[in-house]
Image (cartoon, rainbow, N blue to C red; front, side):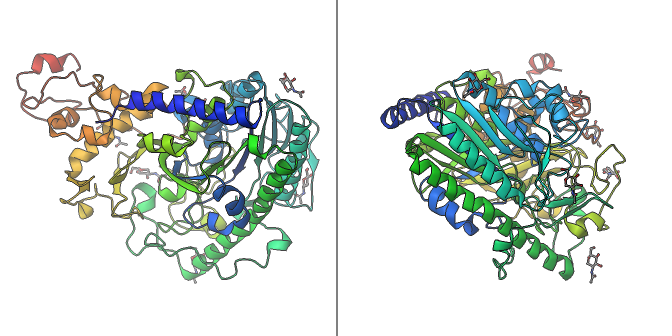
Length: 607
Ligand SMILES: *[C@@H]1O[C@H](CO)[C@@H](O)[C@H](O)[C@H]1NC(C)=O
Ligand SMILES: *[C@@H]1O[C@H](CO)[C@@H](O)[C@H](O)[C@H]1NC(C)=O
Ligand SMILES: *[C@@H]1O[C@H](CO)[C@@H](O)[C@H](O)[C@H]1NC(C)=O
Ligand SMILES: *[C@@H]1O[C@H](CO)[C@@H](O)[C@H](O)[C@H]1NC(C)=O
Ligand SMILES: *[C@@H]1O[C@H](CO)[C@@H](O)[C@H](O)[C@H]1NC(C)=O
Ligand SMILES: *[C@@H]1O[C@H](CO)[C@@H](O)[C@H](O)[C@H]1NC(C)=O
């Protein structure tokens, strides 16, 4: 058995030593941070393989985090998670629009005055941002108040954010300016390059974000809201004509998996598939502008002699699906396509050309950056923990879980998605496009370790999903659906009963859906305060079967579009008290009728 606390302590120590010695040798000042954040970039449709300059400068010179996840597969909530280090249920920014998300909600929750760029300024950094910051950050509200935390900024603003040839931007709070006719990712890149030179003109360390809109779909607002293929620069029009989306087993499958609205989707026809392949080709072309910018920025840094004292992060806000699970282009799901995303880090002490298997999430990024800045966040200020950066730290990392959560709607993109006939509803609310699918609120957990790879979800309809990605990477066989039930499931080589496994994962999800600080990083300690269970494998010991059988279950009483805990069922687990409850049973929440044993008096204190 390993000990999480000891491992974490070693990791913190190693991280601070590594960065301290690395920065001491390169320069006396704190390291610079260059952060490139794309919009809706996929891992599973080979986008990284089609970015040769990114491969040359970041993949070959840095580490690829092969098990990196966003925790909420939608732009604005994910960006808030990223820039605060807090789980979405703790930011309560859960959507792109009012009332549950967007820039006004960011302001209302106090985040505009209290997030990473402010913390970095307090740590002595100059901070810069070019591109898309939040959704619903618009030509109308950009100055009410101004987005906080940056020494230099140039933000693309709604409602023009996803117009690839009419970026409308506010520079340092100035009146919005239209860049009609120019290609938006090129415009934001040029501004980022300018900020880079500006940043290097000062002695202070700096933090610079380039957040281009590529490869997000382009959005036309009139006469109807249509989310179409992204546009690309003319110089990239000749590329990728032979590309097609990988025909993995979950590509427009004959037998559909999933629950809720997903399970009823009809198969896509050839017209849609042809459109979808071109959709992804357009995304790959749109990313070429970003690819060129990566090389450009590396060159500027190199020429200024700053490359060796700069960490470069490359990631995206959430993943993307196109045709997988018969879905039109889009995100918002808990499938790997949507939550498993690229993260590459290059910088002092980070292994070159390495692929890390450590399990990491966007929640971890803010505390990673603050640790690199020499101002580690206090334990309870973040729901994540610093990324392992050296090979030794990666090998020592025992993190196995990622919290996944979502509230609200799924929006099928593409011209067929918007007008398809599958499960469309008019949510009839506010500014939301009326092309969305309801019942898309769920809580989930992704668990990955040596010999196991699982995804468990509970939806607001109370439907549950469990996928064994070791044998079913496409997530097509929900082991909790009667037709897929198996009795030879193995977890790390050990035979495991599907229901017993689901109970563990449900209890873990219960902890994670309302966790805060430490309990998000070490959720098993909420269930086993004595510390003898620190991971899924420990919990599978059969002496805990009754204990897990008798936990309250994650459930919902209704599908709501935001975080309204009163509809989200029980919130707390019952901790294990160290006694052997094997002979006992209980009647929790009216679900189980089992004989009460000798521990009745004890159990009753929880009822
Ligand atoms: C950047 O902004 C911070 C916070 O307002 C300020 O302390 C710092 O002096 C600024 N840096 C420059 C170069 O103006
Ligand atoms: C381009 O953006 C400007 C605002 O910056 C707007 O007035 C104009 O109508 C937009 N053009 C198009 C074609 O949407
Ligand atoms: C294919 O599906 C789309 C979307 O449902 C529909 O609009 C189109 O008419 C279909 N095409 C054919 C040839 O059936
Ligand atoms: C949501 O799920 C409920 C229960 O399964 C169903 O009755 C309802 O029609 C669904 N709503 C939508 C918008 O799909
Ligand atoms: C889900 O299950 C809980 C607990 O059994 C129940 O109270 C609730 O009504 C169910 N919700 C739905 C949407 O059926
Ligand atoms: C989250 O925000 C919504 C909208 O403002 C609000 O109704 C809800 O009560 C909030 N949830 C929590 C847990 O604070």
